[in-house]
Length: 88
Image (cartoon, rainbow, N blue to C red; front, side, top):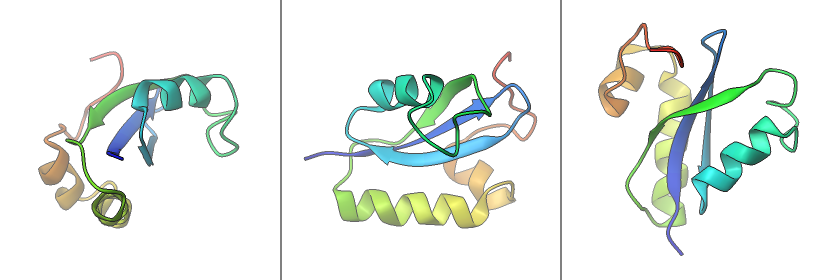
């Protein structure tokens, strides 16, 4: 199975980083209240996803991005702009 690491962002600029086999289905889950942490913080917009990875590599990348969230490493790794917002 192939997995992707993804980053979604809400209107307040908060990020959620996760791993999924089906990123678009997972985004739908986030916006429909299936995921407990994102339930009351949406709506969410997909702003970045990785290439396809093994589960082990995807988990490593997910943890790396979560440790760097908001820091220069997060933005360098994803290519996102620091002021990136869903409406941009």
